[in-house]
Amino acid sequence: MSEIRILLTGYADGELGPEDRARVEEALAKDPELRKELAEMRKLKEATLGVDALADAEVEAFWGTVYNRLERRTAWILLLAGTAGVAGAGCYLFFTHEWAHWSVKLAGASGLLGTIVLVWSVWRERRRAMAHDRYAREVRR
Amino acid sequence: MAAAGRTEVVSADEQRAIARCQRGDREAFELIVRLYTARALAAAKAVVRDGALAEDAAQDAFVRAFRAIRRFRIGEPFYPWLYRILRNSCLTTLKRHGKPPPSLDAGNAPPTAAPPFDPAGNLAKEELRALVRDAMTELSDPHREILHLSHFEGLSYKEIADCLEIPIGTVMSRLWAARQALKKVLAPRMAGHE
Image (cartoon, rainbow over all chains, first blue to last red; front, side, top):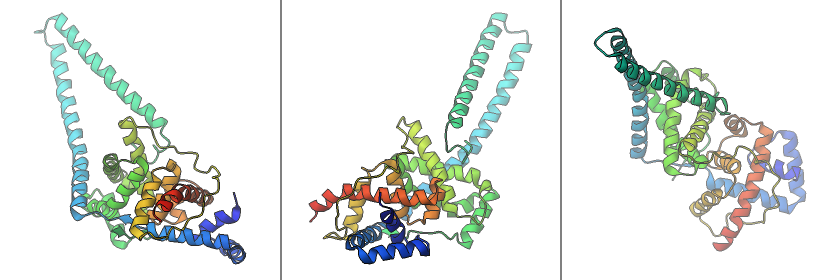
């Protein structure tokens, strides 16, 4: 790959230091092909610069969805905390009171154990996925 | 219609909004979201290549950004920080939908020489823009991504380096390789428009 052509990219984007800029300008003065390449690059960039603007309604709808997602997180935390509290109290009553037969308590314990193993397994899988995600340090999930 | 490209400087209003977001103010976050929605959607689309997935990833990125905004250092450019979160969201979205993740490597392979063409030719600016956008779908993931950041977003090399977490020298060589690849894809399409 030609070094001067790579530098030409930086030149077209206005990103070179004075020394490299002088090298490119010297090469441009001698080589008409290089001048043509520079013109192509500049025209291409000029034609593509800018991101398509969105209609106000699209931005409004987008923000609405983001806001809902932000609020739902709080709702999920409250829901999970409430469910965990009720489930804990239910378990305590279920296992400490004598009205349930031991076989029913055994079935209840089995269901509870299954739920704990499943939750732990999903959590462990997510932890493992995060450990192998090279972008995970940017945002904690 | 296209919005202006490069926005290196974070305005005072934006800085104030970010500071309010860091105190948990969701109303202030609305300004940030409105300011960056178009760019985030376009960038996500360049990574995931699907409009619906791009929207999902961009929304997810803003939610994550709000949660992580306390870690953002006021005074630094905001967009590269947001972009890294967006990129992460794109990868997660692709994974969730069972799609292959974009290739993160092979962006610096020396390309073969591209045939010459005249990008101005007989084409109007909008036609050329559409052709380029279409041609970019045929490029490798790193080439498409860096071309989007440089050409459509108009980011500086420093900002691109921050977005992609690569050295500035790599930005220049990858961009050169990407432009060569783009020219190769564009040349026959341009010929069809002459």
